[in-house]
Image (cartoon, rainbow, N blue to C red; front, side, top):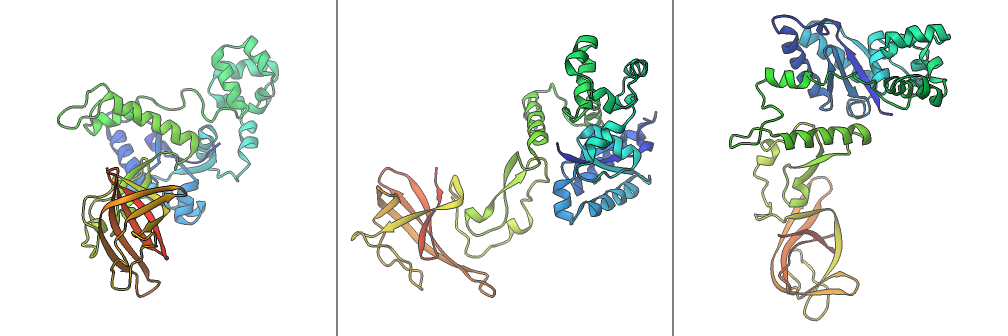
Length: 360
């Protein structure tokens, strides 16, 4: 179960008539999103963010908690209560109490809570008559007996009490996101995607699906492609976690980058280049000399043992030396077209040839 940091701002839990609460809530969500793009607004006054990723980035959970508290104070003028625990249910309880649970302590903390913490007064009243005082007492009941004597909704709470569910039914305010979207004059869920870029229902469903996958598998489970600065395609392509700030088009990506390969860029770029052999007409290896010249024109490419394809056209090589003042990286890129019409980007580095990309 994912460890979460809970942020409870009591002053924002009660909505104001003039809409101030919603506006401050939106500003705080954006401010916390700068610290961690995976911050979620559960309902008014309650925010959660995963503990693992920002802790690795900022150098520890204590540092993240300090930054979160500072952000809340600067944005709202309020003092937050912070907590940490496994799963949304425990994270909220910990945040309301201002308790940062040690790793592995969430189960005992959940079990020690009064039965009323499950949010069902009728269940708490029934539990008192049965001698059930804590969530742990309720969790110890036989699931079959609970299913026999209680409605299905109580069965879900029993799974929560046993640690088989991460959050309580109805713990999230499902309408809050739509209200904030209206406040920001964002397009609504049932709109079709139009000429002016409205986000339609299909994109909203994809957004919700990606959120569920990320919540289940972790922050890095869903990634999107972007571009950054670099001289060759494999250096420019980057995958970033979905929901994180977009990779900027400007900045270093817009720098001149002397010696960069000219367009078009290959449609497929390999994260880990594939070793190949580039041969001349005499079946000898093709080399690139110190002046950036072929030892002989390439005549064939060996993509794998027994897979040899003739080269009908080639361009290059284009040598480059990067970071010459520290640990020089020497590479030479070339383009080749095979007899079947396939176009490849190949690179010479460390006395080998590598398949770096495939053109569409």
